Image (tube, rainbow, N blue to C red; front, side, top):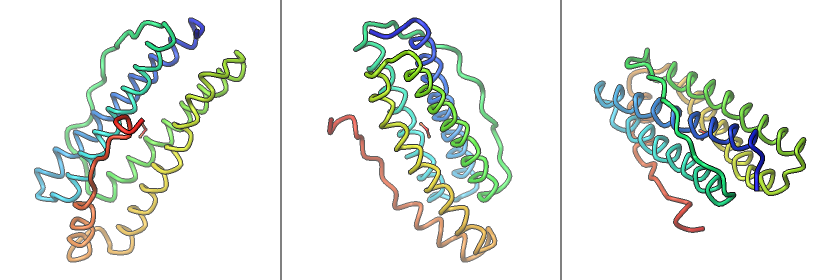
Length: 170
Ligand code: FEO
C-alpha cells in the first residue's frame, strides 16, 4: 500500500517519463530530418527506454493497489540547434529527472515507505548511467567540434545502439 501523496507523486513521475520519451522522439525526428541516422537511432532507443520507465512506474502503482491517472503531455520543441546542443539539453533534462527521483526517495524515506524506496533504487542507478552516457557523448562532440568527419564517425557509433527491454527479463 502506498499513501495518497506517494501515489500522486508517482503519477507525476509517469508524466515526466512520458515527456522524456516525447522529447527524445522529437530529437529523433529532427536528426532523421538532418540525415543523421545514427543520432536518430540513439534518440529512438532513448525514447523506447523512457516509455519503459513510465511502464515500470505504471506497473508499480497498480501492484500497490493505487490508480494510475494519466496527465496531458507537454509539447516538446520541434526543432533543435545542433547535435552538441541537443546532448547538452538531454543532460540538463536528465539532471532534472535525477532531482525528481531523489525527491521521490526523500518522500519514501519520510513516509517510512520501504517498498517504494526499494522500487526507486533501480531509477537512482539508472540515472547515474543516463547522465554518464550523455556526458560521454558531449565530450566526444566537443573533441570533434560537432561537425565534419568526426560528426560522421560519432553518427556511425550512435547507430549501433539497440534497445533491450529490461522488463521482459524481470
Ligand atoms: Fe527515465 Fe531518462 O529518465
